[in-house]
Image (cartoon, rainbow, N blue to C red; front, side, top):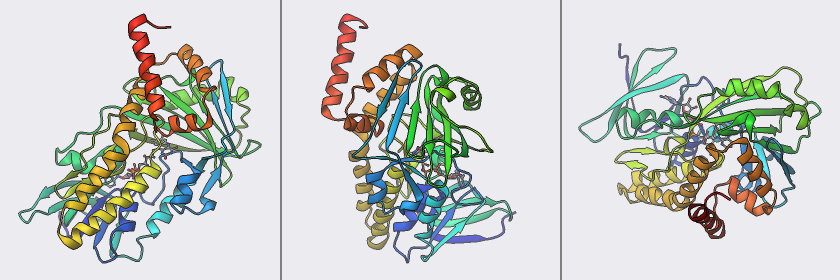
Length: 394
Ligand SMILES: Cc1cc2nc3c(=O)[nH]c(=O)nc-3n(C[C@H](O)[C@H](O)[C@H](O)COP(=O)(O)OP(=O)(O)OC[C@H]3O[C@@H](n4cnc5c(N)ncnc54)[C@H](O)[C@@H]3O)c2cc1C
């Protein structure tokens, strides 16, 4: 039964970092509704929160919401590399605090936040707008009439899929993470691990600013059909826990999430339906890091849409689309090639790779993790591939 019809200029589907950042920069007078299927912003946690000090400072994120790492250790089965990152340090974000902080930025605006509310479907109306159907856990089905819809539903692509504008990604990164008390673990050391315990993916150990230690694994489906939970249980029972010097005692919470792992597609604006964040595959292809990118481009979209609404000129939205392409397309093309290559690596390949990684400079390592490829790195990789094609594997 349909109870009522709400109206707004902009309907935002999904209250993750992308959707909340759009709302944060839309002009105060633009009426906005965010529908978010979870009961709280930033809970449950579906991500592990790795980011970079330069970015969190640029984004103005309060320092109590992140923990700065002074060392990054990388392990494969038989090799290890240790980096003391000095310039652009890795940080680990407190996800719930951060997302609630972004949400607060639009509290004073003409913005309504509907929690425990799921976007179900939408249809185009004669005046060029949209009539969407939503369902809340507490009330019956409701309709929302809006001029614009922003798809920020992450991997679900809820709006674009319903309108048959884009399909749901057929290749995804799926991860699970156990959050332990920090105990005797070093609060400024992060670990990444690869190899036989987590083929077609990687694992991580991230200390947080609120006294926790996040230990997680993620793999790519369908490149492997192993469940992250099984990998996690195998890892916890393995000698690696001792080898990495981990103290995993006390009660733990479980976080889990999924993100797209497909080639970058620059189409973002489909008339009055626009996408940003994971629904546009914005997380980096090398390690699946997306929060800062979703915040940056979410803010850019909020500003562009505000201009379009005020001037009735679609040009700012087109500029948003081309700016994203300029920022991401080239790097994500090479990043995705790397992702596909890494996904097929055997434990032996990883040993060789970690040996090579141990010779990287700090800036080269950071560039690889951020999917920011310099011309020198691309030339080196192309030369290697060409050599392999001509003379076979070395
Ligand atoms: C295991 C894992 C580890 C990660 N680690 C990192 C990391 O270390 N650092 C980093 O920067 N990034 C990391 N990421 C990526 C990062 O989490 C994403 O890039 C980022 O969260 C995307 O933000 P978003 O707002 O686009 O989507 P999301 O954060 O996915 O938010 C979308 C929200 O929309 C809601 N939603 C979905 N469908 C509907 C619907 N029909 N109606 C209403 N609401 C809906 C969902 O509940 C969800 O909360 C990781 C991701 C995963 C899965």
